[in-house]
Length: 382
Image 1 (cartoon, rainbow, N blue to C red):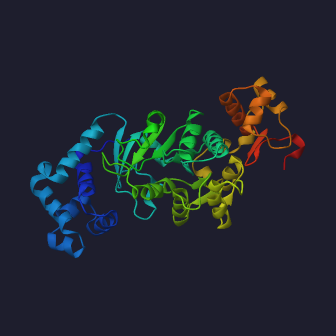
Image 2 (cartoon, rainbow, N blue to C red):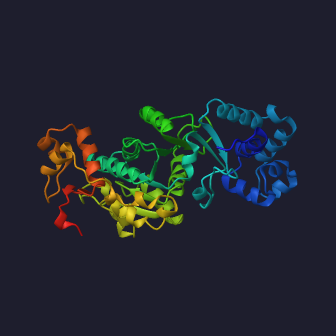
Image 3 (cartoon, rainbow, N blue to C red):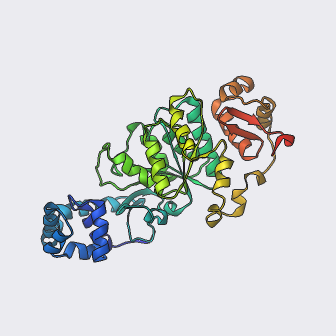
């Protein structure tokens, strides 16, 4: 990443740290004054005419006169010290060349991004995967499998580090040694939920954690919808695996539509309460998908901008079938079969079976449907 001096980053941090100054108004002030330095130096009367709150004006004036000893100055110093504390700590301001181009396009993009991990990933082609925090076993397996397959096809999986579908999506990507991005609803130094501390460490070392919230910020209810607009904003599209009708996942899907992103949904059982949100999305025009290939086909016009053509053709991968793969294939037929049934038939461990099913899906020999896994025979391909 191109280095940035404190002289460049400092004013951005100062503007970010001004209390009672909304993100919307910050962007308006930048449109008027062009740079954060000019905003911070603006006359009080001019700031009042822009409807800046008295507390914010007072903080700006105090920062001008006292710099490091002011409330804003101390927050700036703390942030700069955090960035200097590790080589994979980064603070990316809106005008920085590493700021994600896709995110610049959305309404009210973050002023700053705190990043832990590989900052170069932010401009890679991404697919958001979201869903219920309390998914069904099938839903969790689908998220894991889709994430693994799409990662191997060249898409970077982005999600929200939450329990359930988010966690399974991150884990599926990591299972193929592919990077994944987690967008946090807390300060970058606060992992939530705590159960995902180990997962966050994995993502840090093979991906990136990002947040627009100040250091030390605890999870607040209003932060999650705010976080969701970034998840969709970074991505070419959003895949909803399982979701209730009233859920954060549908909020993410709504943001995606507003941002002109594709929305995909996996259908499920009509008796599954966490499938109803997906059914609602499909009725409202989301693209119904049953396989990872469906998503790659829908995004095919956009992906050549990022990926070599060979990475878009899953069926062009090696057709060599090993003995474990052959064992799995011999225990499958035209009817869909669950992982549990295959475990019983093959006597394989769940981890080995899941990995093998992913390989077979990528080879075009197995299809992962909402009803289970189906073997694809040569004469039943479309």
